[in-house]
Structures are given as structure tokens and as C-alpha cells.
Amino acid sequence: MKKAWRWPVGIAVIYGSFVILLLSALVVFNMNNIELVQDDYYADQVKYQEQIDRIARAKNLQKPVKIELQHEQQAVVLQFPEFFSPDSLEGSITFYRPSSRALDYTLPLNLDQNRQQKLTVANLAKGLWKIKVAWEADGKDYYQEQTIYR
Image (tube, rainbow, N blue to C red; front, top):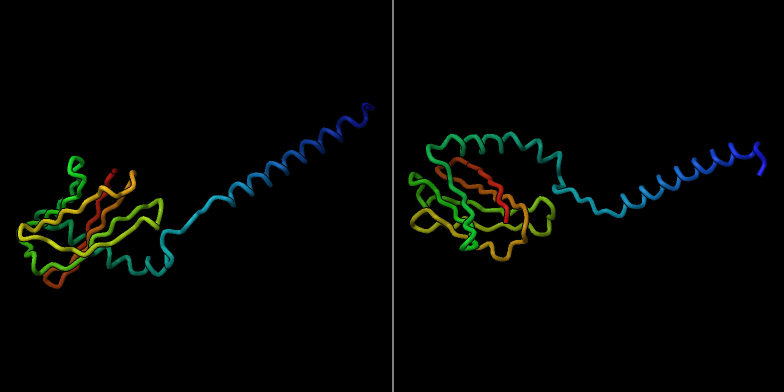
């Protein structure tokens, strides 16, 4: 090969390699499934001030709701303070998996006379979970969440 052709061929190889690298990255990134966790993200943000108020009410309680993972019994135990009557509480418990919307599920709040609810986690996938508890008592809404690792 002549000396005059070395530089143009080298530059063409470098540019060609760069284009192939970019196209490969584009294909790989498009193959990953990136799902939005919330469909109505912007509408949810507008309503979030109400959520902030619920969280503040729950934090200002004299005694918080205890959310405890019991590894030996493979259960999550919710314990409400004594100033809440189990008959007057209504609400829900959501098991939220940040990595997969398909694993999320919600259960109704159903306390026993000790203001306690025990939920089995034997069937939960291993990893990070957020337990979201939303309840209403005496006309006020409350919200508390806790992260667990199963």
C-alpha cells in the first residue's frame, strides 16, 4: 500500500468503528425493557401535596405504626398504637416492588382486637420491597411506608 493512502484508510476505519459502536449501543439499549412505574406521573405529582399531609399526620402520631419483618415466621406484622380502635380503621396495605410492577399487590387493612395484622411473605420474591400502609381514622387520612429486604 502506498504511503499516501495510509492516513485516509486509517481515518475511515476509525470513523467506521465509531459508527458501528454507536449502532451497537443503540440496539442494546433498545432491547432493555424500561417500564415507567406510574402511568399518570404528572397527574400524581399534582395530588402529592395531599400525600405529604398524610405522611406528616402519620409522623406526628404519639406512637407510630410499627411495620416489622419477622424472618423466622416469614411474616410482616403491622402493629397500630392503642389510641386507634381496630373497628374504626379502614385502609390498605400495598406491597410495592420498585423493579417490577407485575409483582405489586394490595390487601385490605384487617386488624385483630390487638390492633395487629400479620401478613405472610413466604411467596414474596427475594429483594427490595416497600410496604405502604394507608389508613383513615376519625376522618383523617394517614400514610406510612417502610422498606424491607426479603
